[in-house]
Amino acid sequence: MNSKFDFPANIISKSLLKFIKEADGQFVVPVYQREYKWSPTKSANVWWKDIQKLFENKDAYHFAGLVMYNISAESSNQTEVLIIDGQQRITTTFLLLKAISKILPTDESEEFRKNYLFIVRKGKQRLRLKELDFDNGCFKKIMTDQPLTDVDKKTNIYKVFKFFNEKITVYQTWDMDAFESVLNRLYVIDFPLKAEHEPQKIFESINSKGEKLTPVDLIRNFILMNLAYKEQERLWNTYWKEIQINVRAKDMENFILNFLRLKTQKYFNEPTMYEEFKSLYEFGSQTQEEFLKELLSYSILFKEIYYEYENKNVNLIDFSKFTSSRYCSSVSMELLKWKYDKIITDAEFNNIFKLFNNYLLRREICELQYDLAQVFVPLLSQMDEHKLKLHDFFLFKLVNENLDKPKRMPDDIELSSRIKETSAYKKGFTSVLFRNIEESSDNYKITKLSKGLTIEHIMPQNPEFNSSYFEEYKNNEELFDKYLNKIGNLTLLTRHENLLATCR
Figure 1 (cartoon, helix red, strand yellow):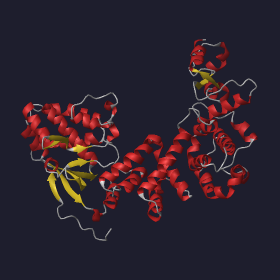
Figure 2 (cartoon, helix red, strand yellow):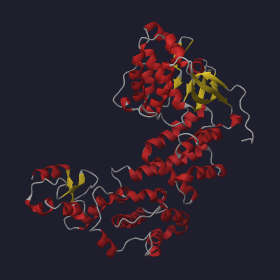
Figure 3 (cartoon, rainbow, N blue to C red):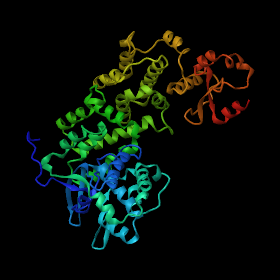
Figure 4 (cartoon, rainbow, N blue to C red):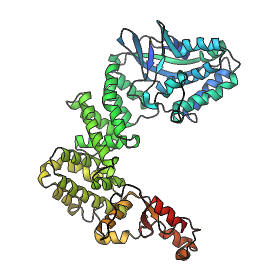
């Protein structure tokens, strides 16, 4: 970016209604933007209170902020106004306008809809705002009066629309002119951009001062923002949408963080994740599509490790249950790739993950606190050198090299001491421990731990239980609390067995 930014000459303040009505084309929320986040209890409520002041005071004005956008004219039939900043406010405004249209008399409602909600050209009608499809098309359904599902009614889009519907009923005797006179005192800065203004850097600067975007948001925006809209849509639908299907939203940051650690073979955490991505991308040779294609391939590996249980390798099932395994996913994804690429055999893969599981199980039982990414990430750069004896390499690095250190694997003495004191209920390691105990017995009968078996209490959680066996604990609250969630008071049961046990 130039040291001195040359603002576009056509930046002006304008009423929001006029901005919407006079826009050159359909407003489009680009695919790289985050989903609609405003809720009736927070941002939308603040927005409404600001507008309510305009209803109550005819001399009041309100500045609603900046709307920054690019104009995209990729077809002769339509022009698109790509919103770079102001997506949440614009979407919220359209929900309010829709709520207003519903209480106007029929003839005025139709005119209001044509002026502000729809573009009508050559007999064809389309929405003035094309929202992202995160909410299963809920925005479009609301605007076009289509039936809403129970799933739709759980979205922020619907909740904010319902909120405005309830609030606007106070003004149901108003006509269109009255509403327009209020909303024409709601002003925005109309801020068009061109490619030479470097929208990505401006976007980063703006969002560093408002509600922070996540590193995942910034990375997605960086990859897609400067592309033509049709190319954005193609890459979104081909790659990013599939990645979001493979990786759950709560795990997305961890997945991309560990993918970047794998690519850079370098340890870093979330605060510097975006800068590390930019360094990797800007100094690398990959195109946007090549990067997304590789990211998609690793998302499939992540999905197999953490979500897919049907016919899954039992060692991976165990591994995925450990809370601390998320710190190791850069190495685990690479090992699974090596297995599929025939760099290591199935037997080697299983032996390595048995070692990992033993390491993680002992550490979680002993409640050792350490960022294990600092243990596993440095090993990435050495794996290729030791690929012929990879299990021995990991054994040395995880066990022999770390004796008496915070990243150690606890020995049997430490383990037997700590296992008696550890609270084990609702801990990921408990089912892994029980499965291993069952497998080592002569009467091993459990074939699929992941199906139908849950961790249950032997002495019930309810202190009012009727059993002479636990009389001592029932009348001693300190003793009851001490042993309730310990390993010795837990067992594996099916749901049916648990119900039968409860009735006894």
